[in-house]
Length: 364
Image (tube, rainbow, N blue to C red):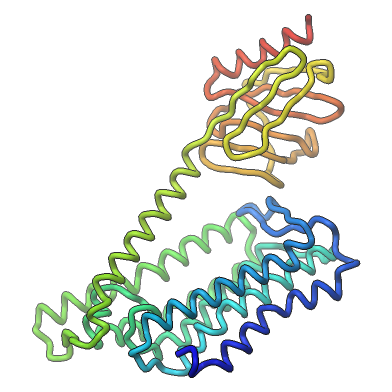
């Protein structure tokens, strides 16, 4: 496969490296630190140095591109795939790379962008393009909807991909229209659409499997070609990867702690998934205990159902720093050198203990 598509590999690799050339041209105009990630709330929450953003990100994308091509060539070397459909393999990562890097540069140069608009356009166009090519994909173990029912029946594969192609195009068009929706509503539309686009084709494939098997339809044929050899392994690998990712996400979402360590001249807040913070007692201007908590939106940091860490903003304080448990409402509001710090413990008792400890240092 690699020898046959050598020109496509070289051209797609050059396209992936184009953002480096653009970055060099814009080098003197780009800031030393560039925003490279935005949270689900639309606020920036990840930054990188200029060198990494210009050189590192395209090179990482190129490495992923080559890895995907290599793995695909190893698994599909005995298959003759539809050439038009196979273009997805060569151009999906370069296309996303160009779109994403253009957005990073434009944002770094001060252009007024709404991240949710970028996400809606990118994901919507991806589903439209992939959905258009999906009915053309021939049965194989790496590209398409790879489940046991499609891999062991060519009829099931073809009918499932024809239905999924129409569904993905319609879903992509729907996602494009979310650019006109508020961020909170658009996020729910994205989640619902992605779940539908992922699971409806699987359910349809299972329905075909049961229907054709039950009626002994002549259209269903259990294949004995090399695809069958990969069907069980592909399903097992997909299941293992899915379980691993779900466990990893669950670990990040529902673990982590915030601890306060008191020293002679300062105290340190130790957070599991964020930088520790040390504050001198002499620099504390005021300490306040609030039972009703403090609101605000995250502009940089880490957020999960358990922890809210990093930089936040609200009307009362403007920008402030937060080290809190998400579900614990009561908190301690501390001001130091003109900066506001909000922190709490895992429960009301721990939060009250933090307040009394810090208030005691001020009174002393």
